[in-house]
Amino acid sequence: MCADKPSTVTAPNWQPAKSEDLDSINNVADSIHLELPERPEVFAEKFNLFPRGCYVLKQDGVTLGYGLSHPWMLNDIPPLDAFLRRLPTTPACLYVHDVAILPRARSHGSAGKYIELMTKLAKGIGISSLALVSVYGTDSLWARYGFKVIFDAALVPKLASYGDTAKYMIRRL
Image 1 (cartoon, helix red, strand yellow):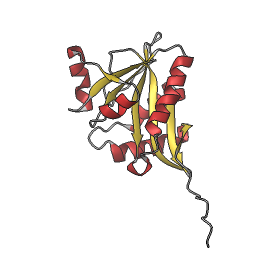
Image 2 (image 1 turned 90 degrees about the vertical axis):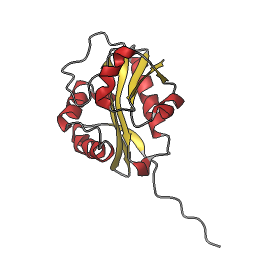
Image 3 (image 1 turned 60 degrees about the horizontal axis):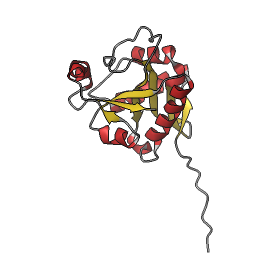
Image 4 (image 1 turned 180 degrees about the horizontal axis):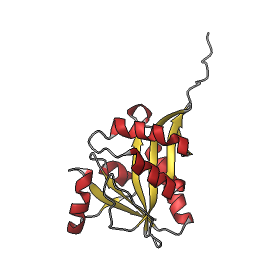
């Protein structure tokens, strides 16, 4: 009778992003967001403005995803592929700009784990809401983590750069 060998494959885990991770973040973005591209400089700016909200999902040293968040204002959606220039002095939410996970790393609950990290971060800096724009019909995924779709006609023009399926969602902490 053969004994089972222990698995040497580790589950993907979130790690704080470093500046040297920006190339791999861009590579993941380019492979997932074919219809919603953003320039590498836009990702770099988000990292430089608020590195505490930037994480990479790694498995055995390989980047399989990323999450980018930054303080922002509620009901004020930053245009896609645009520079923020600066963060608000009195933010009302932690804006989850993007959580992108390659297909081979999905179904480990990684999106929820990133939201847990951002919830802890938001509470730690005195912010009581998370906000995001759901794309590609992922609003049901985000609803599982407590996000609710906000219907506001004033948001429609701001959502345009995120595609036809974009929905603005908020999670109160």
